[in-house]
Image 1 (cartoon, rainbow, N blue to C red):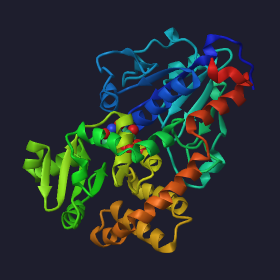
Image 2 (tube, rainbow, N blue to C red):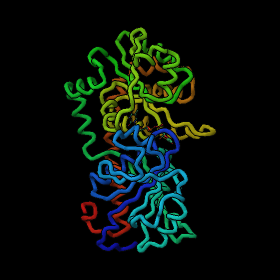
Image 3 (cartoon, helix red, strand yellow):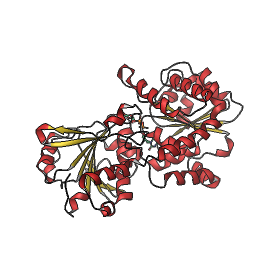
Length: 399
Ligand code: TRH
């Protein structure tokens, strides 16, 4: 444990984010960074290697700028060649360095960290998993021999033996108020030219592709209610646009009782509202699944696919936790639909089972959300972890 001086450097946290594909990596790093600034008064530098993806979830980002400030976060472009183009020595020393989501910080920067006195707290912010082993590995350190530095593993997760999940301080109340406020919801839908009252069932469909998707769409067409299905721009929207050129032309298509509507990517806070405004949310990857939890509506998770079906083990671990306190019939229906949705299996039967249970799922999700909130939010848990490592004065987070 080290004592830091009352200097500026202890207030700087540097977050490294490499975008593998899609939006989860930058989505998580961006949320974390702005929360550290807004709620903990920390100075944050976010280094990211793909500003175009970043701009999709944060329209104020300009991909042309190598340095910019967004919502108080200093955003630096970290070129894909990584180690070469940034002059690491010109960067001020950071108190905490976060290597997010399996990215690797450049060798030149590691050498600089090793020379820094006191050395920074080096954290590896890991991917999300509900697997049990995560609890045993959370907060462990790993000596980085050649650099005489320790790296700590910080795992997000679903229990109080992990780092918890990302949520902003007032998010649950804000979303609950929005759900209770019909006028606010109407105003939200109007921004996308949607008359929400015309639909009894509103579904957001943020998903990777699925070979049986058409059978699900057919089910929705045949429901007695008017159904709205929002599809964010991206691969799935492109696939459906090829299938239905009219959808591409008009951005909207009526199929029986189902209205398909393409929607440009929303800024993250608006996506949170979309999840709260819909009756069912299909989400994918690591970040949208967690946001769907906070919305408290029924959700279905399509996990990011990995080689040799490694993702199915993670999915099972999530279902074991999520379904643990459910009545057996509900748990069976959820497990069946999740399995079908994550394996390209036939969807009709499992949808028919899950559909009438949506009100019960919503009720259960509210309780499940309470349990997860009790573990504390990931940003605050990170700050507390850093405080312990630094023996920092209580007003650390305020300065
Ligand atoms: O985009 P993803 O598929 O990201 C994935 C996963 O994170 C996966 O675990 C990771 O390994 C892989 O990328 C490389 O799904 P995810 O995680 O839900 O991220 C989507 C982000 O986009 C999330 O922060 C929410 C945000 N988003 C918006 O801000 N606006 C929108 O309109 C939509 C649809 C999403």
